[in-house]
Structures are given as C-alpha cells and as structure tokens.
Length: 343
Image (cartoon, one colour):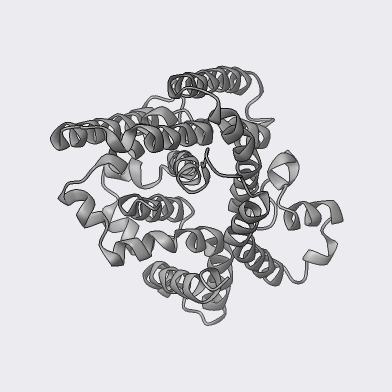
C-alpha cells in the first residue's frame, strides 16, 4: 500500500526541521540564499505537511471498509512504529541532564513517558522538545479508527467537505485566540493537539478518496504535474512572503495547519504522478532516506546536545558544522535498520 514517491518527501521535511533547529552547519550556509533561505527554515510548514501525509498514509494502510478492524493489530503496529525510538530519545535526554533530571517534577516526567506532554502546555517543551509532535501523532492514531468507522457510511464528497469545514473552523478559532492570547499562552496555541487535527483529517480524507476513486482517475500526466507545481508554488511563495510581511500569519502560526489544504493537494498530485519525476523519487536510496526520517526527527536534538558537549570537551567545536548532519544520517540508518525495522 506504500506509494514510494511520497516516502522521500518525509526526509526533505525532516531536513528542514534539522536546519531550523541549528543542525545544518556548512550545508545550510551553502544554501542560505534568499528566497531559498526562507524555505530551508520553514519547519512549521514541514510539520503540517508531515501531519497531512500521516493521515494520507494511515488511510492507505488501515482503511478497510470490507474487513473487520483489528484494534489490537492497529495499536500494536502504531505503538512499535513510534514508541521504541521515542523512549530511546527520552533516555538520551535524561543522560544529558543526568545531574538535573532527578529534580524534575514527577508529573512532567510521567507526561513524557506516557507521551501526553503536548496536552499540558507547561510540559509541552520539556525533555526532548520536538517530541511534543509524537504526542500529537498518538492522538491522531486514537482518532483514526473513529473517523474511519464514520467514513465507511459517508460519501467521498461529504468527507471532503467535512474535512475542509473542520480546517476552516480550526483556523478561525486558532487565529482569533492567537491575536488575543499570544505570546503569554504560546505553548497552548502552538502545540495543543486539537489545533493540528484538521491537517491529519485532510490527509486521511485525501487517502480515502485516493482508495475509493483517485487511483482510477484518468488525469493527463502533464496536467497532474502542473497541479503539483502550483501546489508547491503557492506554499513556497506564501512562506517567503509571510516572512517579509509580519501582518500575515507566519512562523509558529503556520504550524497548526494554515497551509494544510495546499499541502494535501501536493500529496494527492504526487501520489497520482506516474512520470519520471516519481520514478526518480522512488530510487531505492531516496526511499531509504525517507524511511529513516522518523529516527532523524526523534533523535536529532538529544544527539545534537550530547555531540556538542563531547566536542566542547575536546575543544573541537569547529567540527560540529561539518559532521553533525552526516552523523545524524548514519545514526538514522543504524536506528532504522537495527532498532526500528527489526521491532
């Protein structure tokens, strides 16, 4: 059920997150030219893309209207996909803060162990701070069976309209609250799982459409590529312009799905694409890079902290800029093939 040309796009989104978190080094510096520079640090939009893609992929894997839904198999698959590497990243952060971690409040520690920190604004950035999004993913996984059961009895047209209305309502509520309560309630407005649900539902609805109707669509390959290009162009232009015009929603405001419909359009167009472009994206080496993206995302902060400290102790901080990104790719490969995949 995997669509190979989508897999590598995860890696691109994760690399943008690494750049945003200061892990690009000389590789980011070489590409840090306007307007590309704005896209290279658009991590908030990358997170939205990953949520929409997650919904699309989960629908491909688990939407089975003619089969009995196995909650046991579903949760077993979802749990082993996320939690082992998540736990390793948590333990690495504990190692990094070894002298301090015993003094952390027990509820904060438990919130991270049970992956619910995103629901508690004051805990959302604790320990491995990017891991708040894993808590959001677990929420999506909990919601999908309910959405799938409801979707079995609905028309495709209704699913699309409901997902769009949910997105509109979410954006209206979020932008209103943002104008009233940011920055004093920033952690709630940026990380609270309910604000991200519309991105996932848009992706899941797109995945159901793809399974029901999309695969049979007779779309001219050139027309589909144009749609793909327009979707990417709209997202890219908005990200660039919004950084120059602060009156527009920008930065963290974009993380809660502001561009989700256009990113979902990109996912659909790429899933339907059968040209050489998708053939290139389906090269085995690119698929492998896409498959290690979760390991990169989950581990990149604790590895960064530990590696920086090690280089500081060796008085070789200059090495970080050249070696961190290649090191993370190697660690991602090891984690994927020797931890993630065997489990």
